[in-house]
Length: 133
Image (cartoon, rainbow, N blue to C red):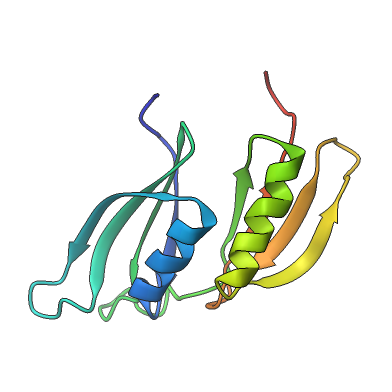
């Protein structure tokens, strides 16, 4: 297993709900750092996706970047191991509160693909994209 070198970064209004959703989706918690003055706020979280993917996120900031780093609107592509895993991941996500935006289908580039939206407006393309070997 290699350490990810590229991370998607998300912001959540309810970071604990975001953490629960992401782990249900299939991410593995690596690190969660909470605000010492307000432990309901996550100042930094790092999650792993499969063998080499990573995601970082935290609570919506209340500083000079609050208007720039807003919750929702990000799109993250998650590659799963097989076509069947696309449906299984979608099913887990929907059970955890996701909205199914696009049913699993076979795109021209191969594999199976589906699009879900999380409760805060981030989108995840679940893909068995054959890509590189």
